[in-house]
Amino acid sequence: MTYQEACAWLDQHQFFKIKLGLETTRELLHELGNPQDTLKIIHIAGTNGKGSVGATLLALLGAGGYRTGFFSSPHFHSVRERFRIGNALISKDDFSRLIKRLADFLEGRPHPTYFELTTILALLWFAEQKTEVVILETGMGGRLDATNVVTPIVSIITDISRDHEQYLGNTIAAIAGEKAGIIKPGVAVVFSGRETEALPVILDRCRELGSPLTLFGRDFHGQSEDHGLGYSGKDGRPHRYPLILQGAHQVINTSLALATLEVVHDVLPLSQEQIRTGLEQVRWPGRMELMRVPFHGQKLRVLLDGAHNEAGVARLCQSLQSGYPRERLFLLWGNMADKVMGPAFDRLLSLATTLILTRAESERSANPQTLQARLPQEVRARTICIEPVSNALQEALRLATDRDLICVAGSLYLVGIVRHVLLKEDA
Image (tube, rainbow, N blue to C red; front, side, top):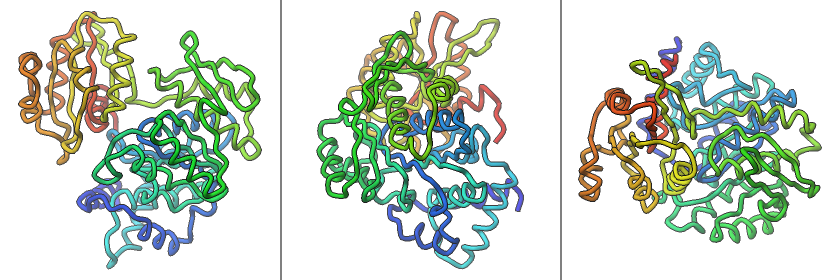
């Protein structure tokens, strides 16, 4: 099976819609020898920040010399981005070989979903590659997420807010209950705890299962200090660390990663020097990522951010209001059709001089003209609809000068397409 054939086989499973539940993944992994049982796993759930926390842990553990795997989703351009050890993506050969193994194994069986297959592939590859620790990010929810077949050494729950309400519930408490599903008996939990409706749900679940809880604002603290991070953990001593990822929300995400390392210090010890080195090496593309793009003799600023729900857009607004000085803001936007944008989106629109609506190449993407029709007249007057994404990007670049800012947001898929156009990345 070639790499292209392997991608095509996996892509066929995009047609099997979201299916929450553990039975399929658990049964298939059992027949494949339960590779997850050989791994030390850090399991991450939450609405926003999972990827940033995971990327920070990847850099930290890498600086400590640990062979660290990271399974994340979604990907921008290449499915290989979901599977990495350190900074290296899974090779095309390994990907093709494992997909061939799964295709042969599943012949004549009911088809798992795309996410179930990528989860199984990740666990097989990490076990095969003898990783010393694996960072495993949930796809959606937690309780019924395909990744929730593992027993981790620590569970992390990032900020919780409204998203995927048709699957997870339409209250913060209900969504928190789904995220709390990753908590295992006696396994330590690190939680941001900043949403008041979510906190009692997580506290109750930890008490019920006897899972020690390390809570932001109670057991560890973090705040922005001169473009860096002021952090204090269980020893109460203040530490000053570099903060590479942009946005005020990265204070909490980095603090969660640092607190997690304190929890697992006996298993995965790191020195202060290794922590500082690791934090200087954190990279997480497409999240408040500022690019300088040469265009007709100018260096234009393009800010890529995967903000795609109310909480994410609110954080993007906060960053745009506190930084990124500009004359004009060109907002290149395209969201999924199932997203309901609220007051934060209205705030973002008020910041934009020009709104360019487009559509990521996905069957779930919202129609730009439909989006425009729902906008207030004042906003429609400064809105243009352009497809495909490459044409919309070219128009934004044509309109902007080096005194302006182009912001691309609304969907990680959209950000991925723009990154690919700008960087001409290989799949």
